[in-house]
Length: 427
Image (spheres, rainbow, N blue to C red):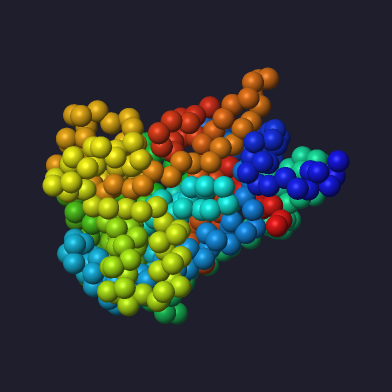
C-alpha cells in the first residue's frame, strides 16, 4: 500500500487527498501572540469566511522549480536596459522617475497544465503574503497517509514575518542608508472597507513591534508641505502602497505623488515597478520571439519565456473578426488593470462586451485552464479551480501560496475556497 501511495503525483493528490484542516484554534493562538484581542481573528474567520481554505494544494518539486526558472528568466529580461526603454515608451510619465527602492511583494501567478506551469499574470503589489504566512504556520501537517510523501519545510517562529520586515528595511536602506526608519503609512482607498484590512492591521502590528510608528490611511489623509509627507502631525518616512491606481494620478493622491517625485518619502511598491512588471502589455513582448531577439535576450531565456508564459497579444480593432472567431480559446484582460477586474473568458463573452473590449485597451491571452482540487465537503465532492502565486522580492521567492475558487476568475466568494497552503511533493 505504501509503495502505491508513494507513486501518486501532485495532480493525483489534488484529486484524492480529502484532508480538511481545523486551524481556527491555532490561528487564534498565533494572532493572540501578536497582541490581537480577537478583533482580527473575527475579521478573518467570521467576516471573511472565504478568505482561507481548509484544504491544502499539492505541487511537485519539479514543477515548482520550473516556476522559479520562469521567474528568473522574466527578472533577467526586466533588468535589461533595452527592455526597460521598450516598456517605458507606453508607460505613464511618472514611471520614468527611477527611485532606488525595488518594490515589495511582486506576485507571479501560475496555472498548471499537469507538470507544465504557465505564468498568466504579474502583479506589482500582491496582497495576502502575511495572511498566508499565518495560514502556513497554522497548518503544519497533512494527513497521516500522505504526509510521508511531502517535503518537510520547517516554518519556525516568526520566519516569514522577519523576512517581510527585512524586505521593508532593505527598501528603506536603499533610499536612506543608515537613517532610522521611524514611521510607515499603509495607504489604500478607504482602507476600512478593503477586503484585506486584516492584513493591513497585521502589518501595523509587525512594524510597531519593531518600534516603527504605523498608520493605516486613505491617500486623502496625507499632506505634502515643509519638505515632507504628513499624516496629521506625524511625518511619514515610508509608504507601503496598496493602491491600485498605479500612476498615482487620482486627485486624492496628489500629495503622495508630489512627495514621491520630490524624494521626501520612500514609496513601495511604486509606479515604475508597475510599469516594468505588471502592465499586461509587457506580456505581449515577453511572449513574442521577434521582440525578444530584438532586445538581445539569450536563446535559453527566450525558450523559458515562450514555453512558460501564456501567449499574449494586444487587442486591436483590425483583428476583431479573428479574435471573435477564436474567442473560446482566449482570455481578455485590461492592459492596465489588476487582478480579475474587468477580465473575461472568451467563451463567456457577449457581442456587446466584446465590442467594448475591442474599443478599449485590452490584451488577449491564450486560455490556460486552471488545474483542479477536489475536496469532500458535507459528504459531497466539490471541485475547485486553483492557481499558484509566488511572492517575490529581488527575484527571490519568499512564499508560495494557492488560491481555490469557482467561477471565471479567482475570487474570495467561493465557500470553502480562498488562500490555501502549498505542500511540495518529492520527485
